[in-house]
Length: 468
Ligand SMILES: *[C@@H]1O[C@H](CO)[C@@H](O)[C@H](O)[C@H]1NC(C)=O
Ligand SMILES: *[C@@H]1O[C@H](CO)[C@@H](O)[C@H](O)[C@H]1NC(C)=O
Ligand SMILES: *[C@@H]1O[C@H](CO)[C@@H](O)[C@H](O)[C@H]1NC(C)=O
Ligand SMILES: *[C@@H]1O[C@H](CO)[C@@H](O)[C@H](O)[C@H]1NC(C)=O
Ligand SMILES: *[C@@H]1O[C@H](CO)[C@@H](O)[C@H](O)[C@H]1NC(C)=O
Ligand SMILES: *[C@@H]1O[C@H](CO)[C@@H](O)[C@H](O)[C@H]1NC(C)=O
Ligand SMILES: *[C@@H]1O[C@H](CO)[C@@H](O)[C@H](O)[C@H]1NC(C)=O
Ligand SMILES: *[C@@H]1O[C@H](CO)[C@@H](O)[C@H](O)[C@H]1NC(C)=O
Ligand SMILES: CC(=O)N[C@H]1CO[C@H](CO)[C@@H](O)[C@@H]1O
Image (tube, rainbow, N blue to C red; front, top):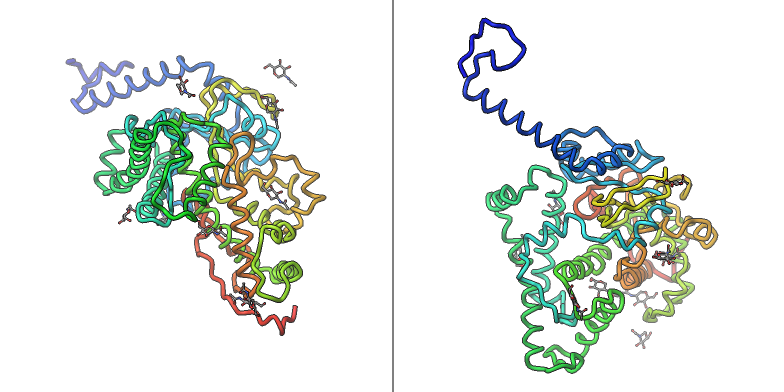
C-alpha cells in the first residue's frame, strides 16, 4: 500500500493512507456493498415501498433519528407526521423494517380482516427472545389459570410486565438497540434485566401449575380444584371463558398467544380503565355543561336513593356511553397497533400494494382525527357518538380497541367497568379544574398519558341542593 502523495490522481490508493483511514474506507466500502446487496435482494420490496410517501430516510437507520427523544418528543413528532401526510398513508423506515401507517377506515378494515395480517410485529420477536423459546411453550396449556391480579405474584407481574413492555416499545423506536448483544449489554448496564426476569416468572408458574394439574387429573379440566374461594374462582373462569371463546386457540397456545393474553389483561383490565376514567373526569371537569348532562342522566336512571347500579342501568346510560367513546376517541389508550403482512396486500387508497413483510401501523391517534369523519376533531364533543352520527360513519372509524376478528377481547368488560366507575363517582361528586382543553399535553409511553396528570378537584354533591 505504498503511495506517492505528490501524485494527484482520482483513486484513493494514490493518497497516503493511515491505518485508521484504511479501516474507515474498508468499512465504508463494505457497508456500501452490503447496502446495495440488501437493496438488490429486496428490490421488489423496496420498489413497492418507494411508491409510498414518507419522511426522508437514510441507509441502514432509515428515519430512526427522528424517533430519538423523550416520550413527549416522540409523541409530538408522530402527530407532526400525521398532520403532514393527513390525506394519505405514509411510510417510516426504522432500520430495514418498513412501517406503513394506514389511515383510512376502508383500508383498516382490509388489514384488520385479512388473514395475511397477523398481530405478530417486532414486539413479539423481541419478547420471544427475552422470554426464551423453551420457557413457556406448553402445548396442552389452556388459560384457566387463576390469574388473580390482586395476589402478590399477580401484582408483581403487572408492575414488572408494564415496565418490560415499556422497555420494549422504547427499543422498537431505538435502532441502535436492535442487535441483541447490544441490547443485553444495555440492559445489564442500566439494571433493567430484573423487569424481564420477573415477567418470566408468571408464565412459567402458569405452565408448571398446568402441567401438574394435567398429570394429576387425567382429562377433564373442568374438575380442577383450586384452593381459592368460590367467588374468585368464578370471576377468573368468566374471563378465561371469554378468552377461549374469542380466541379459539383451544389447547394450542403458543408463546405469542400467552403473551397476547397477558398484554390484553394488562391493557384492557388495568391501563385502559384507569387512564380512560382519568381523562374522562378531566374532560367533564373542563366542560361543566356536559358534566351536568351526564349527572342528570345518572339521576334519572338511578334516582335519588342509594340503589346499587346493575347491568340494566348501564344500558340506559346512553349519553354517558357517548361521553366515554368520545373520550376514547380523543385519548385512545393504545396509540398504535401493528400487523405484519405475511403476503402482499392491496389496499384501496391509491391502489397501493403493500409488500409482504411490511409492518402495518394502525393508529387511532391518526384515524380518530380525520376531519371528514369527525368535524372539529380536536374538540370534545360527545354528540360525535349520537346514533345519527355513528350511523353515518364507516365501522372502522372508531378503533380504540382495534377491530375485526382479532379485536380486543377485553373491550366489553373494560367499557362496563369504566361506566360503573364513572357513575359511582359522578353520582355523588362534581369535578372541577382550572385546566383548559388545550392545556392537556400527551406523552407516548407505551400507552398515551397526560404529561401533567389529571389535576381535578372533587366536591361532594348534595342531591337536595342541586343547582344545575
Ligand atoms: C372479512 O373477510 C372475510 C373473508 O376473508 C369476508 O367474508 C368478510 O365479509 C370480511 N368482513 C369484513 C367486515 O370485511
Ligand atoms: C397444535 O399446533 C401444532 C403445530 O402448530 C399442530 O400440528 C397441532 O395439530 C395443533 N394441535 C391442536 C390440538 O390444534
Ligand atoms: C351518594 O348519594 C346518595 C344519595 O343521592 C346516597 O344515598 C349515597 O349514600 C351516597 N354515596 C356515597 C358513597 O356517598
Ligand atoms: C339504602 O338506604 C336504606 C335506608 O335509606 C337502607 O335501608 C338500605 O339498606 C340501603 N341500601 C343499600 C344497598 O345501601
Ligand atoms: C362505543 O364504542 C363501542 C366500541 O366500539 C361500541 O360497541 C358502542 O356501540 C359505542 N357506543 C356508542 C354510543 O357509540
Ligand atoms: C389496481 O392495481 C392492479 C394491479 O396492481 C390493477 O390490476 C387494477 O386494475 C387496479 N385497480 C384500480 C381500481 O385502479
Ligand atoms: C374495574 O377494574 C379495576 C382494575 O382492574 C378493578 O379493581 C375493579 O374492581 C373493576 N370494577 C368493576 C366494576 O368491574
Ligand atoms: C412511563 O410511565 C411509567 C409509569 O407507567 C413511569 O414510571 C415512567 O417513568 C415513564 N417513562 C418516561 C420516560 O416518562
Ligand atoms: C422494574 C420493576 O418494576 N421491578 C419490580 C418487579 O416487582 C418487584 C416486586 O413487586 C418490585 O420490587 C420491583 O421493583
